[in-house]
Amino acid sequence: MAQIIKPEGATSKKTIVGRGASSKGRTCGRGSNGQNSRSGGGVRPGFEGGQMPLYRKVARRGFSNYPFKKEYIALSLDTISEKFEDGETISIDALKERNIVKGIDVLVKILANGEITKKVVIEGLKVSAAAAEKIKAAGGEIR
Figure 1 (cartoon, rainbow, N blue to C red):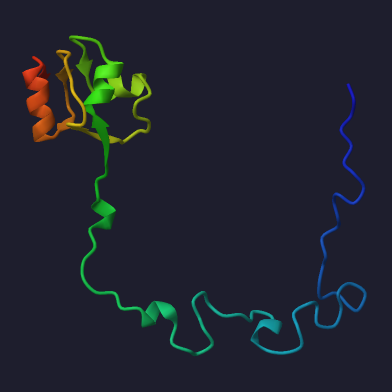
Figure 2: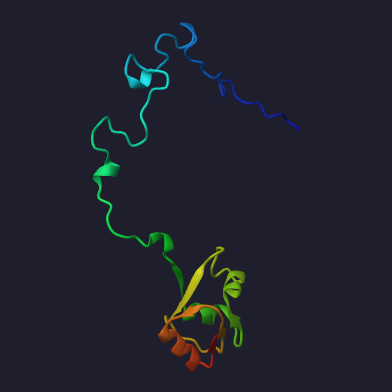
């Protein structure tokens, strides 16, 4: 087997600053003067040099329900007709087995896009009112 050899110049030694004139001496790459040139210098994140920072300037009012928002994956009746046979039970596990939905905590809602002619049993999924009518008309069941 051939050995893998790194090309010349692929690695370089870490630059150690502030150890005399030989290695990045004098200002050590920090510039001449000012807060950032000092040891322990620097400003906190969001500091804008005394100007009113953006995070204080922008108004934050009201309530946001964003952390608790639930997003459903829309599933049409056409997809169900295509992927499932007559008399099968459709649950979140059945959808994952057939790679229709992916993920751990996914929420699915069946919508009335298309037609269904097969008798299917829907278990533990949200179904729109129009889709429920079409499924029941085809002889299906919703649990």
